[in-house]
Each structure stands twice: as structure tokens, then as C-alpha cells.
Image 1 (cartoon, rainbow, N blue to C red):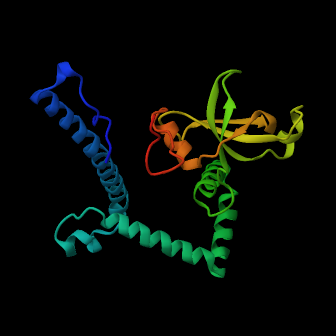
Image 2 (cartoon, rainbow, N blue to C red):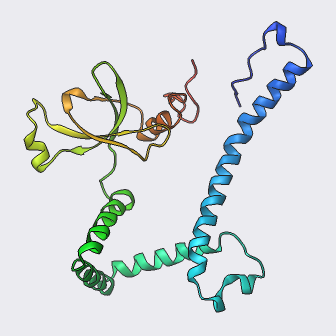
Length: 227
């Protein structure tokens, strides 16, 4: 395993304390990603437990049978419940019930707007369809001469495609922010102004999240690019 601290220290830093400092920083590099991953998973599981377990009647709370408040029980219940709902929704009766519920919601002025918006977001993010980012690209944003990483979503359609006077078809590009790539801007660029990249969408996302510190290695994608 290669770390940023494997290089030889300058002569004025040689000695016991320099080696101690190098070992400490190397240990931080090794421990920090593992600790952050465990903490994020632990926190997410706890958040799901805190949302699911209060919905279960006290008479059948898992803690009464297990004897301890075991973290992750709510997550397991949520996964089983979600799979069950999805299996029912795929059937004829489930589709009929879903259509009936959606017709009922469509008659509620405020609720129907919230429901339709959340449904569109859920279908876009989670549905197994072709509606996903196709490729990573470079675009000049926010002005000429400044380049930004973007993700090509789809070709513009309808009124958006026909309203802009461009010499080439418009393409939707999502430009993420750093270090949170889930927020960003939806921009439409002519295809002539887009430079498609060979790197995968996942590698481009790593580049954005790391604020340009982690470049993909074409020879070994599991390792960062060495200078």
C-alpha cells in the first residue's frame, strides 16, 4: 500500500520524531477512510431504526424478544417491508390498488403536487431504467475559458429543444457542486460545446467529491493517478 508519506523526509527532519510523525500520518491515512465508512453506515442504520421501530406496536417490538436494543433490526424490517411492497405492486391487484390510490391523491390540490414531485424524483433516482447519466464531460462554465466537470443526462426534447437557436442539438448536462455532488445545476449545451471524457461517471464523481485531488488511473482504476 502506497501512502503520501512514504517519501524520504528532508535531512533536517530525520531522526526518531520524524519517523514517528511519518508513521502517525500514515496511520491517519489508513484509519480515516475505514472509520468514516463505519461511522456513516452506523449512523444511517441508526437513523432508519429510529424511524421504523417507533411505528411497530410495543407488543411486538423486537427488543422484547431479543432482550437488547440491537441496532440494524429496523433496517432489516424496512428492507423486508420494501421488498414485500414492491412484489405486491408488480402484481395485478397491486397495480389496481396503486392506480386507485393515485387517482384519489390526484383530487387533493396540495397533496397531489407533493406526491407527483416526490414520485418523479424517486423514479429518476431509483427506478431501473435508462434514465441515468450517460457519460462524464467537460463544459465551459460559468464562462468561456473556465472548464467544469459535468454529467450528460439526455438530449433535450419538446419546447426546450425547439426554443434555443443553436447550430447543434441541445444536451442536458448536470454540473455537480463540490464536495456534495447531489446538488448542482441543470444546464443545456449544444453538442458542439461538450467534450466527452473517457473516464467513467463514477471516476468523475470521485474527482468532484475530492475537489480535484483524486484523478482516475486509466491503467488501474482502483488506484489514484500518480504524478
